[in-house]
Image 1 (cartoon, rainbow, N blue to C red):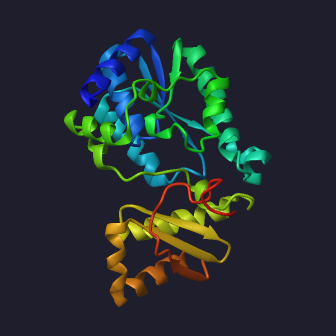
Image 2 (image 1 turned 90 degrees about the vertical axis):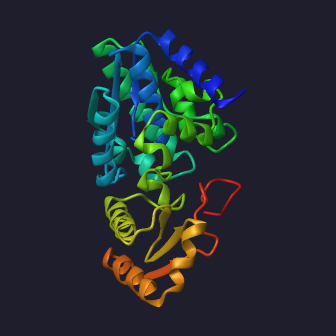
Image 3 (image 1 turned 135 degrees about the horizontal axis):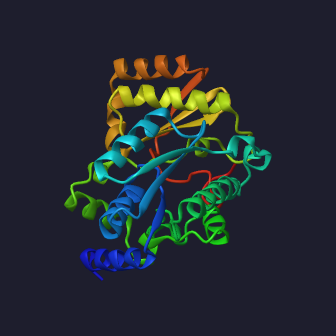
Length: 270
């Protein structure tokens, strides 16, 4: 099935919902879903963004800006994940506890405001990947219209561009907690270090990146097309200076570059 046919299928799925609350991060997937819902349901939609130490401040600002761009009503809520001891333990099922908290809060808002369904931005590429949060979505009755329509990330980017969404080429993001190896406790201080280091790298012009937290060591992953930039000694020195300023003692560049879920089971040891 071609991307346009999947897009038509998505619109039909959304229309059948009658009213929809969208878990909204401001990323490629949730922004596309919010736009389609906003167009199809004519005001019977709400985008909700959960805020915690795991969400970079820059992403919070972008979520608000993108919601305004789309024209969808938008609400920020406080997440309770940092008060959940199971989440802070950072086991392989960390995302389950985070998403359970999120969907419980979204369900409460949906009931209070009269929205029939809660939707989140999982797509067809997520099938078969390690996604403990999808179990929480199932338990709380959240739906994944993009996945149901069979839309892949590449197709969503293509269709987002056709719709004029500024997010069509936005780099992939994930919560800051995903930078900490499983089994190592999540703390607000670690998240602050990661956020500061990643903001510094973005100020240097890097787009697709992760700063993985290994105690006193920052392991930096960069997009394959950006790795050549570290060949410049002045750039390397500036990276080291800024990342150490964030609180790390040692700074390393991962020569494999950026990749999704390196800490996930079957991909990398803890």
